[in-house]
Amino acid sequence: MSQFKRAKKEYEIAKEKKNESIAKKKALECAKLLRQIAKYDGYNEKSYLEKAKKWELVANNIEEVFNPSKANKSKPTKKSAPSNKPNSSNTTEDEAEDEIDKFKNFVKNNLIQKSTMKWDDIGGLEEVKQLMMETIVISALQKPASIQPWKGILLFGPPGTGKTLLASACAGSLEATFFNVKASSVSSKYYGESSKIVSALYDVARELHPSIVFIDEIDALTTKRSDGISEASRRMLSTLLTELDGFQDKGSDRLILTLSATNTPWDLDEAVLSRFSRRIYIPLPDKEATKEIIKINTKGVKLNVNLDEIADKCVEKLYSGRDLKNLCQDAIWNMIRDVNKDLYKMANLSYKELKRRKLKTRALTDDDFEEAFKKIKSPLTKSEIEKYEKWGEEFGG
Image (cartoon, rainbow, N blue to C red; front, side, top):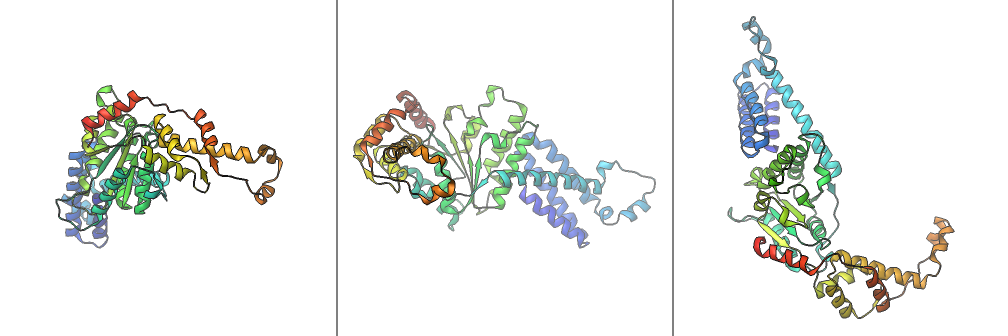
């Protein structure tokens, strides 16, 4: 669609400059691009083909576009249907462009986030981070045409293992535009709007490249089509698949990387899986990763603990990265309550008075973590972990 908009703008410039031959050439180019888009978007094919015909009509009647009064004098008794007039065609295209701009503004105002996360802010997952770093580097380097970076990466695994953090670090380290997309962000109760939001999302991503498009819980958008999903959902899925194919970006050196995350990879539509040639299992943190995550989440507070024993216990309890963060927070609060007796009573003081005072702290101890272990429970079981591992062996790569 970005190529079409460029051709349309060039047509309008030629029209303003009264350059009839260039205007005709650009009108035909608009028609050609719309027909190409129609091939890749089955659900919107009819609409695109109708627009292509209107642009062909503009090209074939370019003299009337430039000299409408002359055309009316030469054909006083003949009237064309309103929808077939070149001016009507221009009005239709302008309305379509206004609608596109509306959805693009929605994307810019609601789906773009500023990421300050860096790779070092994530504990563990070294192999995954290395793969994603390589993808970014290859996309920017000069290289033979046959060497292409990954366009889509699927991150799958148990909840809370750092999938969102990886996407955020990818954008933050690259200083790329970060699109954080959830199912609720692109779902609309109005027919056809979801597919238009998806199209606008990738249009904006191309405009603001380098871009990282992170689709969280992609299974909510792309469950298997045999499950009886609605026509509107099918249309949205078709549009998403077209964008993931990336035919508009072929031959381009701009980076548009789509990262998707799911906790239930076995529910994904097969066509979606085929678009993500890299499917990476994000496991629960091992002992070394657990120690790193604990250090990151207790930064600024001294640790007077047996970190190896705590890490072993966390691995045994099947803690995710999110569970470890909660564990550290609970341990810190145990310490705060211990050295700040009757802390809640200070709520009677004014905000200005509170700002003058300083919170008492001490080093975290094993006892602080022991109390925290009593409250933090993992929702996962070993059989569920085995299910992820089995799916990864069969479909990961």
